Length: 401
Image (cartoon, rainbow, N blue to C red; front, side, top):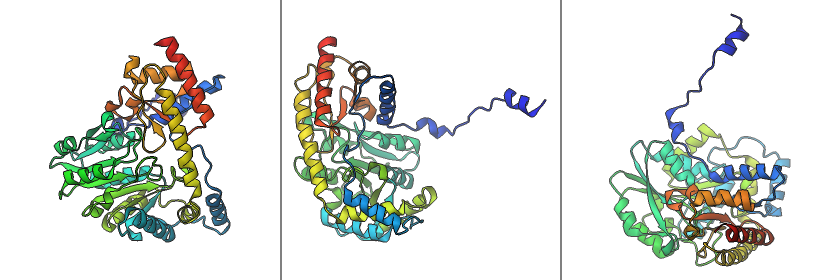
């Protein structure tokens, strides 16, 4: 038998590791692909599915990166990040979270997700329990399951402005609880945990040796109230891994740059995971990151105000549509309307709005089982397009409900 014949005759089955069956996805990218396919067929789609600022990166940050490229910042850097950026982050977190942070407590990574991934890899063994918000960012649940730990959802309640019931949280904590994930401002609901909420969560954990992954990626995008971190609570700095980054605040999603702030001994282990996976974050983007943190901050406020204007208009518009009722989100750039009165399941409604109304949004169930009955819209699009989307949804409901 010739080699060519052998090659045809042998069908090699792909034998994946069992853990791959437990790996989830982020539906926003799948819906984006479907929306793009419809656009290629000539349909006009209003994109409200992807969580990405529609602004360009501030000019001063871009110039700093270009300058860094010309100056030769194109080589490997330390796995934990460039010393100057780690120092700038330590100063920023010390100032904003009102705790003393040193540069050896900072690890810079390509994007925010690696901090979720590495924290869980470093802390969660098979059978350990991890409490996470639901509806919540889908990667939490996906990674917990992937590692063979037990994903324990804490439900976010609409009547609490998508806060959690602290008594419910207390009842979920067991001797097997290794990590609790909190996210404020929150994706997908736009909920913000108040200082009192955070203090109540801290009280429920008490003095137990449980780590908290505090996802604060939207910390600069707050419309009502102010950001408060569990890292600020006395006794919690050593038990908190703070996740923040540049994507949302400075419209730098494609630059891939986030960071974790944590106790120095854990930072050493997270850095080893970085060495084993990515080696380092791109050097020239880190130089731009220093400029982002230390340079002119006016662009952040411009974006925040514009997102607030869009949020106000879009929520008001949704509340005029049959079957929709929407709370006013206090942060991030998402709105999370209740659609139970339409009588349609979330996924079926999101699909219909995409295919029949030309509006791309996400089903609440993309963010966990407790997301049923909701849709998520990103208001990171122009007011003109948001109004177009409202008009299309309104016309669709008049025909179909």
